[in-house]
Image 1 (cartoon, one colour):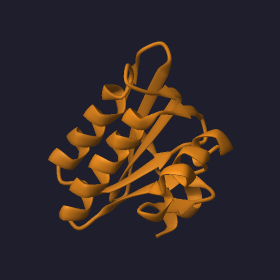
Image 2 (image 1 turned 180 degrees about the vertical axis):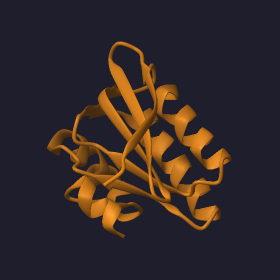
Image 3 (image 1 turned 90 degrees about the vertical axis):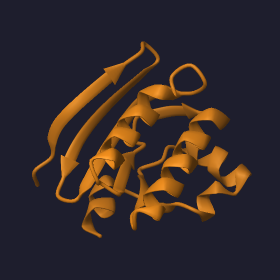
Image 4 (image 1 turned 120 degrees about the horizontal axis):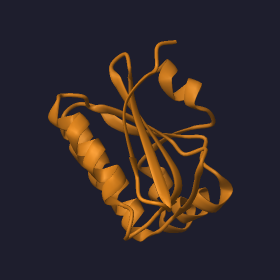
Length: 122
């Protein structure tokens, strides 16, 4: 599969890799997504949608922590992507991050996948 890197951002506690795959933009955040680092993910997601990409895939396999600010980034991206006819797909969520989605009920509004490959197959 062609998964070419198109950008990265790093702020110590969070590193975000962005690449395109077919009609999807793949975001791979590694580390902690919180109030101090959320812009590293929200900015590239907005940039992708500004170019017309409405299918956003977030590979959460290396995401160790997500607070309410991080959750709000994902919810905001989901609303915008759905208005464009797409959506946000979350893949390979770790138990600590998954728990935030369970507690808040946010898991019900996202398309969740066990692996990145499954998220890309749709």
